[in-house]
Length: 126
Length: 223
Image 1 (cartoon, chains in turn yellow, brown):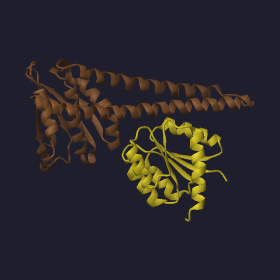
Image 2 (cartoon, helix red, strand yellow; image 1 turned 120 degrees about the vertical axis):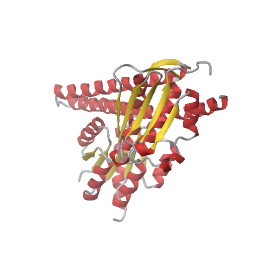
Image 3 (cartoon, one colour; image 1 turned 30 degrees about the vertical axis):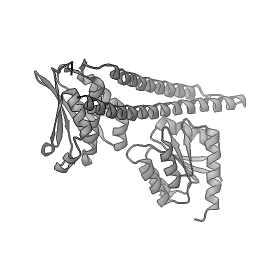
Image 4 (cartoon, rainbow over the protein chains, first blue to last red; image 1 turned 90 degrees about the vertical axis):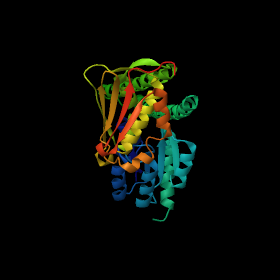
């Protein structure tokens, strides 16, 4: 069964290419350009991992992270950041982010993290 | 005045840091998209090596995406360049609309993060004022930041520039949540110091839901 991933980023061009590249690697990829939309998707679909930009318009990364974790605590969240200070990264990990990857991201590393996320989710009680 | 200048300098450093961090973020986003396009090209090349032909239309789309991102980065860098240049100028005569447009462009990400739309309404002619450009940009940002926070559910701030014989006024309108209580925090010492350095004044009119920044056309260049 393919790995089901949701990518959330307000950069549409980025989302489209990531979806294409990850799809070509056998993943079942959905995308959302806002945390609000993504939150609804997470509530209704069983994703193996969520990849989310930490700084998006309207909803800050910490709020989004809290809401995602409340809605689906078992779904690992990997944050993508363009520019986030270390102390904020630490806070995000404390809030439940599985990992933080700096942009531009290496797809091999991201794919590896997604596999780790999937395994982590399988081990967790639902 | 020197203490005021020193404080304005500290506020200015914070402003410079904030804008630089935002620019850095934007540039990283651009690089990220270019990076993924390069990765996709690699993917397509590998597939071509295995006998799957590359669709020229796909390459055309990728090329257009990269060009778009390069134009975007070029715009960001040009804005940053003008912003950095503003520090070098102590007192100079500026075209106010250009400076306001630059502040709006540099802080567009902060507006987007809050979901606030910022509109600019300019007078017919060009409004020129002698000023310290960097401190003025800092003050404009602080006024805009306050205005965005006070824009309420409407989430729309309008900057209206009006010119008189002796001054130029910038009205920050649409501050639905601006109340008498807001005056406890705005203008703070930061804004007051910048106002003193720029020989400008600020009227906070919560009953009209606006703040008005007035810049004199005649300032003492030696102060």
